[in-house]
Length: 362
Ligand SMILES: Cc1ncc(COP(=O)(O)O)c(C=O)c1O
Image (tube, rainbow, N blue to C red; front, side):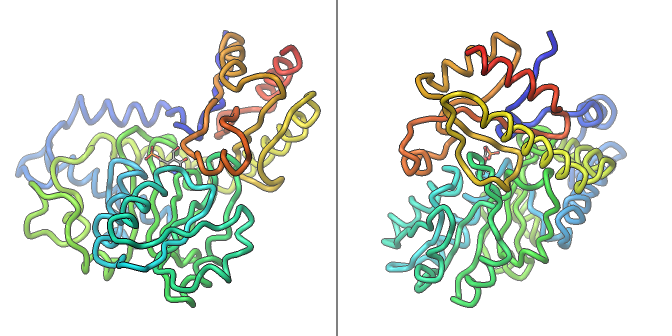
């Protein structure tokens, strides 16, 4: 039975080209980067740095502003531990939203507690932003909600935040690889995302910030490869995930070959199709707006999401069930957990039909 994978918001599947690029590194030029004066090391360094250029081009920034991290979580922690450590002071406010993933909440909560600063939360529709921006030094917001699929108006928020004197950090984990992300247009100050959610390998993520900003910050971790180095290397202490970065480069090529706009259109069509079909299921509650990214969370009266996921698994369909690391949002919705389906380029309407058929059975 061909399995159906509806859990791309958790991690995406990987194309053969990505797997091949990782294997090619292992088989043909394994070496550390930025160190060896021999062929394999020079080749690995060249390929690693080429990916920095590819990432920069993908999100329309300069390549020396790309910092490779482990994932989105590490990228956000890096900002909290470097910029936040110096700039968040007693009485300051950090503005966030009720829909954040724990990765963009816990680092700020910990920092705020230590510094005696305050976290203020925006409503789901962000309508209270004007009243809440006063005294805010940082807005930490997700680009796309990993539960509701909401696409937040980051450019608009950034404009308002900057007028109020606040910086903006964007969690782009669910955006990059699914839709065009142009940092210049967004105007934000920090942007983070994970390679493994955009067809790349696990263990590699990206933090973007302006060079002028990065130069003012102290390193996040200390160790080899960063002593005496300028940014971005000063934030990449120790041997990085070389094969992960190289695989990410192959993922970006793959996405670009299809075309990011085309991917967005495909996911949009699937999402609208799924929303329409799901709304016909008896007892279903679907969370989130109509216009959204390819993520749909729902509950069916009388069926626990875990039981639903177990039932669908036996039918060959992988979905996510739980709170999706977004406890405040689930509390706001008055639920403990939800079932979630999420799409990427490899999903089809036929797969959604199969899901609907199974849901009708249950
Ligand atoms: C919106 C959002 N932010 C952050 C993360 C954390 O990503 P990672 O586990 O790759 O650090 C996720 C993962 O699901 C997410 O959906």
